[in-house]
Amino acid sequence: MVMADTESCSSRAVDFAPSQRRKQREKIEVYSEVLCRLRDLNIEESTFPAFEDELWAHFSRLPTRYALDVNVERAEDVLMHKRLLSKAHDPSGRPAIQVRLVQLRSAMDGSQVESVHMKFTGKADARCSDYPNKKRVHPPPAFGTSSDLEFVHNAKRVVKDMEVMFSARPIHYRLMHEITISTNDKPKLLAQLTSLLSELGLNIREAHAFSTTDGYSLDVFVVDGWALEDTEQLKIVLVKEISKVEKLSSVRSHAINHVRELEKTGNKLNSSHVNMPGSGNDVWEIDTSLLKYESKLASCSYGDLYKGTFYGQDVAIKVLRIEHLNENLRREFTQEVNIMRKIQHKNVVQFFGACTTPPNLCIVTEFMSGGSIYDLLHKQKSGFKLPLLLKLAIDVSEGMSYLHQNGIMHRDLKAANLLMDENGVVKIADFGVARVQAQPGVMTAETGTYRWMAPEVIEHKPYDHKADVFSFGVVLWEMLTGKLPYENLTPLQAAVGVVQKDLRPVIPQYTRPKFVELLERCWQQDPSLRPEFSEITNLLEDLASR
Image (cartoon, rainbow, N blue to C red; front, side):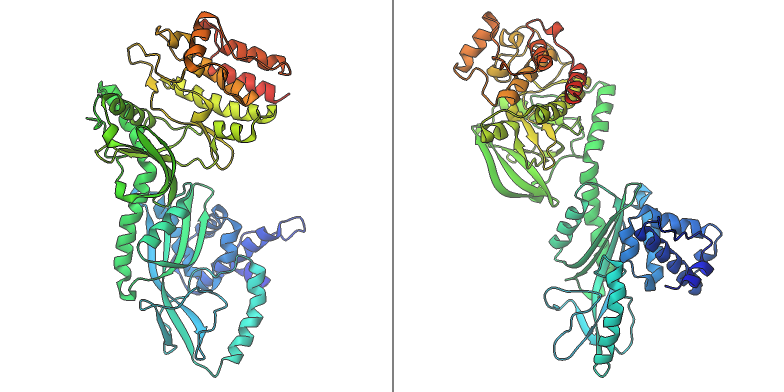
């Protein structure tokens, strides 16, 4: 790139002071060269007064890697990306998709020579084309394979040498489809898209994924495996299939909004039925044919838990055994779906959807690769060090505070129901016996697990959300010691001791006084003396900061 060209095309100040970062300078250089080329091509849009600022805003919202990877010789492609991102701002325009044929050059001498710009794996199939260079009718891809601009610069000399070497041989081009997609950015979007393309029979030869600073995605794939003459049909299929992915991503917000509307109009869930009348479950109802089962994680008398995938995303699939379906299990299943579709928090396992049509009853949630706190404790056969314990406890406390603020009691809080993701974030799981507090009725002692159960629950007395606080105190003790509460007693003996003799787990002598005080407050016999989770979070954060 020539400095004079940069200055003649753009009025934007280009400061090459030593303190300026190299990659930022390179982004400005690419921006300026694209601007020059667009004006040289007499692109009308480039003559508009605001165009310079709009083009720079486009480069600014994308990572530097975009500028380093984009083919500046195809400046028109930058405009195409800019327009797709603009279209994606409008919900009716999502997903914004461009599909076109691109051609990739390779010198041929009996066998294909690998292109400097594109590296392919495998051989061309019947849906690709290698042909001599009679007339070039399709553009090259928008991006090369290198993510390093210096490599591209150094490669130019190699390209020249190769062109001389093969000048006497025919130059061939290989046709493929380039797919450019812009939509709302979201976790694991790239995995979902690549899985979808694979399911359509497309072989991904190159992929470039970018996220903007304002929450949108720009993903570019070079693929083969689709008939070259059916480019428009490929676009139609992609719009249809990617829209399904979009629907999956919005399922939770739609479900939450629908539930709120139902509550405003006074409609209530009939928990005695698996099919939830009037609940708008078509939004989150899952087609089980889209679930892929990988491995069984656990089993119990009434069902199995599997790891699987849904639209390319790892999920946990809880499947109910239809032969064991009774009225209680049916009610519990319905209750869990009804609660999980209402909630969304970073410390609560994410709900993707459910199948409520027998015999395929299942609940699909995010897969927590870190396993449960219980498993981790018993694997290391000891409690957690205090800094880690406090970090995990804060996660749980914040999740429980959110649930209580939304009127939901968990009623079965224990280490086995606290799961960790790949980043070590703890999330609350298993809402099979959870309940919306506003619903009337006395809970039975079988609700939850005796070793973690509050005394008022064991005694069949009326209770509120403070029962969860008692259970949380026992969870804190679990994480501190790594032991099973009342391990020398049967569950029933433990329950009798808690109610009749004020029995509580023995706190180790080495425990910090402030932590002991928190445990004892959570274990108060009188529920009104137990703290709220908002206060517990503050206390834990204060301990962690010391």
